[in-house]
Length: 391
Length: 169
Image 1 (cartoon, rainbow over the protein chains, first blue to last red):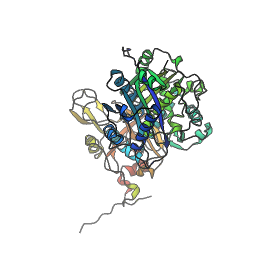
Image 2: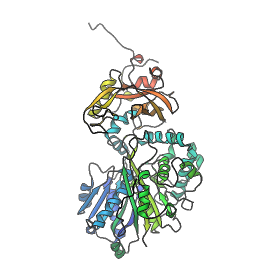
Image 3: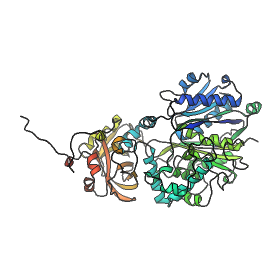
């Protein structure tokens, strides 16, 4: 794909990463988590509520409410508003929207918030209302959730490229190690490879620890001009490059790649850096196979060589390839659309030196990847952003 | 074992949320035909059902009989389900088949399904909610599907049911 001449984001800052601590179940609504996120953004930034004139909102469980209703719930008056119903890529997409809004002057401070609750019945509601294709062609086949769909992709990937359960297990074990030092991770009991391999099957070849644990929580950050962030004394990062792609390879019989394969050259060209300059990576790890596919498509190794890449690297914060440094969704939990923001907030903490868990030494540049929305047989949305420490 | 026709709780399938446009699949399945939407303008075969052709956007779509021939790309055995019907019948096997005519379809598989990649034939049946579902067999005549108790039950195969007949008088 030709590299387009896209304007950079040099004058815009990303700041104030907020995680509203996750809980397994909550009787509160998604709005409670959204309000907590906004309150924390204001407290940490020192901004008054009226200074926030843009809102980007993502949630699976706020329904029937959307971003419009959220302005009245939260009592904010904004002149720029967006709702991003894109699950695992919502963080990257919110970031991209907010960057341009601030850059163009349509908004001066955008709060990007993803908030979801989790009740015993909420998962079923999400599944039932996910897509027309899933109602017609997925639900009648028994799974009632994403596990079966990703099991089929994992099965194909393993057969085609020779990946083994131990390879996926190594990622899960390393992420748990990272989670053990991250205060908000829900799963912080140390995990061994034996634990992983001996866990009960969910949808073969997926075992228990291949699957994220749904939970409640929120993630949020602010986007504003760098000058404003400096005036407020806020540690911030800049976005060196960012891409998104939807429905990238419709003629592939089964998913082994995502839009990153189309966009990675543009991403790195816009950022003006190479893979060696990346200090840490946050993939969208709803299932380990997707982390592997992202690492391949983003160019850290060739297609099909993901398993070998795993065998030759270590993925803890002090490893040769720090990955999902807060434990990722596999160990932190998947708080709905917040799962599509967790990599961004964690990367922001790492490159601004404001880590909550273990820091990657001298981390200055982070790549964050998003993936989402398995409407029928494949995830349609992909995106990625490279964050750099503000000079 | 012969089973009663009296419905039990675990026989109940969830309320079908199928779209109106998917009705063609069920109508054909009712007479054991596997039909998919084919575009009258560009002959693209598509699945899942849509309101327009995915390639040329023509809305002139007709349901046409399919051979069902394809390749089983992958399979999974479910040990968990959120759906009470399937939860009561685990483990359950499903797979992805790339039809020779183009689309990839999610299918029910018999428990002795072949290991992918394998040639299979896809056919359509009505499930217990009365809607069409796709099943795949490694035999063109689908005879092995009739050996699978779970699939017979799912597709309400009459060979499992004791029928009462009266003279109606």
